[in-house]
Image 1 (cartoon, rainbow, N blue to C red):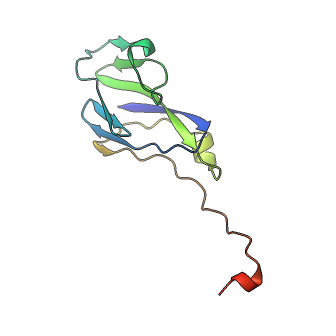
Image 2 (image 1 turned 90 degrees about the horizontal axis):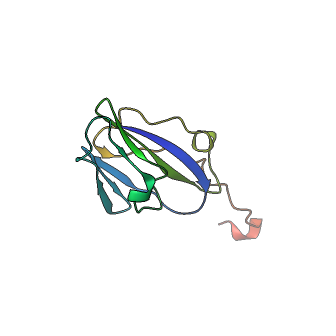
Length: 111
């Protein structure tokens, strides 16, 4: 499976789990197991705010694009992601954001 990422600045959470040809995106399962080699599932046939564009089966490998939400502290890896190739079964690992910035607490507030 190849997952391309299309970054968008938004504060949503994206959790994806792969099990064979089934992707569970934020708790909603999408089963692509009926797609044969060479098949294309048009974007109009997919009802998800996370899947962007069509899903293709190229040489027996699914290729799709997911929206990648960018938090305020997004990293360069998130802003300019490379495709995730050979995605294994289990939780899909996305590029991580930068560490949260320290808050500007007044000295008397620090204990």
